[in-house]
Image 1 (cartoon, helix red, strand yellow):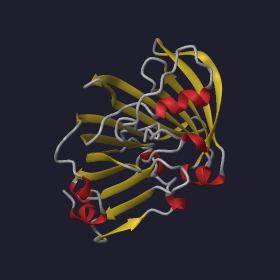
Image 2: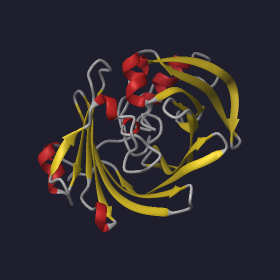
Image 3: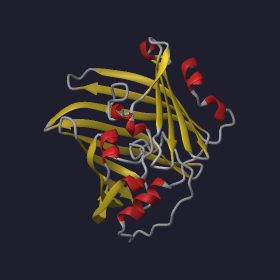
Length: 272
């Protein structure tokens, strides 16, 4: 899957872009052109947010985590740092992602675990693994190049919650992307008005699972569409293995204290 689950297409509101918007008419049927416009949708710069993550397993056990996130554009792409605020056992755990616009260049990610007192680079083969026990992967926290996917229009007149959408299928067109994301294919219901996914269905290669993501409570802030709530669940057959709820509690753009020099491993290891 691709749009930052960064959004990639899942976390569109957590991992933000600033490329100029591409004009796409509601009657457009070229799936690749539509997805290029989705990826280029303006989403702000020098961003700060505070996010609540709630994870439930098949036994009904629930874990809550609060994350502080910052993101900034740089000439080659975008940088994002996420630091866990609570609970105490994961406080200061962090993830630094460096996304490059050039799909031929590998994105960089480092995970910092306070218990180890050092940050570790995430290998490409590990990016399809779960991020901190959620229904999201490390690859979901980065932006994918639309050119790494083959797109197919499934329904040019679909609807989601009464909103006009395109239903589009995306399949990785190279082994590298398929391995990093862990998805065989993805179906996205893309809003014609907002140029953003409203729901996603992803076929997970490992374990033959399905992942369902729904984007809810979408608001326009400073002229930018922001997803305030994301519901994700992973199913094997009819059984729900886990659920993740992501609620954006605070978000602000153009923050002067979001500085380029703070997006590095040394800052990651300092924590909050």
